[in-house]
Image (cartoon, rainbow, N blue to C red):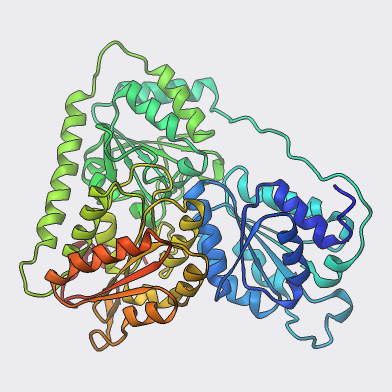
Length: 549
């Protein structure tokens, strides 16, 4: 530590920087004022947002875009309370996020001080790890431990609070704690041999890669595994793009890979749990007589609603590489099955395209998603984000993923709406030169629409396409508002962006052209499209019958 670090806040800021902090998302408050100033002194970028929930969602978005830890900071009392929905979402997503919160000074607690709240008690059951630092000399130790808990092993949210007087207290100069390098664990040789034997006897094996594979940065290993074995792959949640959708062995998202998964006699599940997103390991994605091999870095994440035939405890990438070595062969035993799986994924895309082509005079959400996704793909793509109730299904169905972190969506079992704009802002900061599209519903957009101001202040160019059908719905229920009640284009203009309103199909292409052009200059753009409220995807209609909630 340099001699410049005189307070607990400065020590904590230097520790944050040492564990990789580049961008900090926050809403300033008096309990963290000195800490924010200390973070700025380290050279990290501090992004002030309009609501604490969105600060945490942006930190999650950073993690989803980069496969590194995201950082957020909130003030005491209502600041922490506002952050709770974001904390719940990020932890459910298994995203590595470190949240620091200010806290009432120790001398003022229990006296009715402004913003005094038992924060640790409120948050401890919602996160992977929580702690409170009461010694200014140990603030760096606590920061490093919080980072380790958030980012190592099975990732999640780590919450650290520090009272205001601890941050302000003077500390003695000293060195920063360091993190030792960590090796990537692989299962024991017997388990690997058993897994390889199951695969050799399989006629129709398929790999399902989930968020754990993404956060372990297993893209190269997944590519090497499928190239070596020829086994087809489908990706879900944060793993979208871990294997390029254009790779001949990739079936794309689980929306399109699902039929092949249901036909597989063996499913190799990599870094994903059997929660509602995977229909609890049951129909229509899985069948009872399938062999299930499940890889996870922590044994307690194996099984649950569906017990695997064999659980493999190890790093996703290291385990895939070890399995590939066990399966070396001079022939391609699964070529026919791979072609069958690819045909089923292609048939799924054709089915979605037919469903989107309603042929009516109005704008249908599916047609809109298809048109925007096709245009985005022709232009070379970038980062695509899907949000909303019905709109998210169309966005997932028509978007493509070519690189890790380039296709982001409501990926956790929490199903939190409104994540789209915070995710987009984080992705824009992580990859400022890359085109960015958010496809969202009007209800979901409303949760975080004020963050357009944040995007404008930060000069983040993006195109936000809003399915404005006045229906706020979920499986089994809906609430109808007057169609077009809110002019999102006007809202965008009022907050420093470009706003375009589309009322008919022929108006879409010119509006999209203007939005893409403006986004290239760092302007957040909203294309507000009045859509037919009666058009709902078959997937959304079917979700209620599956009993996932």
